[in-house]
Length: 351
Image 1 (cartoon, rainbow, N blue to C red):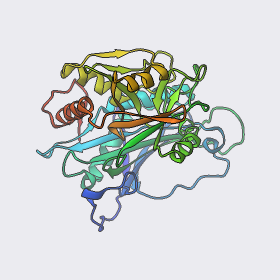
Image 2: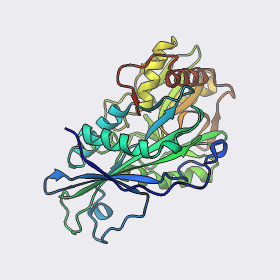
Image 3: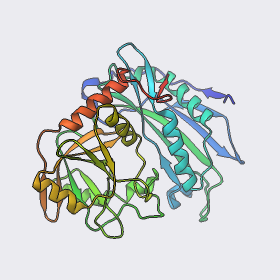
Image 4: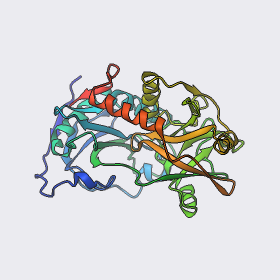
């Protein structure tokens, strides 16, 4: 169905965007897209000037955590083509998250038309090249103003944009979290629930205290099996170039869209990939013995981020400074975005 979208335009932006020195997530678009769910159905969607939200103190999401989000990117090619990368896959993941949190499904037509309308309004925020991106943040949360522990009956879907450069600057070192856990089997580790990220913040403080910028999570039962970084899926490179990455079957790891893209690109550039359980002891011993030559993370925000060292058992396990496999995949990723590597059907959603 076609969704009617009311548009309330914002005045033109007068401050230029610093494309060559963009902070991540600090500069916001002029508009935001909103859709409300109430009385058992989605109401008329709208585009409004970017503004603060007004919520009752009893808003359900603030108390009981019925809140989720997505992270997507849009780009502009050198020929001027503007597109959202893997829009349908992000929409499907948003609805998997919603189902786990007993939230109503967001129809694809509503999601895509609302986003398309927003991006036409935010045309000036598309970056001039593939060196930067337009990051898209859908947020979906419960809005019932009632202090009762039950699924909300009303919800708000909000989408806004921010032009971005790199998520991390400088070398990244990872703190292997030995005590806290991010997710357990049967929990919410496989979805983008807001609470998952709140649960990671204390570990991030511990990481920073030893000179690291991100945590690497282990399984909740034995504190041994590698799961993912706090902001990225995890990949390890064996000497010879084979990629290793933890599998998704246990349901404790986010099914990253970038992770899946890397698996596709690895096959394109002739890299073997093995998805299997990985012990932190296998990896640290492999680093010490030269069998593990690279570690990197993947995610929509970070894309492909080499990790220089792991901090585990009171010491740093440092990797070689060169990252040829990660660089090869990063080049392939750029070639996919530029169109030099053909993308599977549906991955490039033109705006």
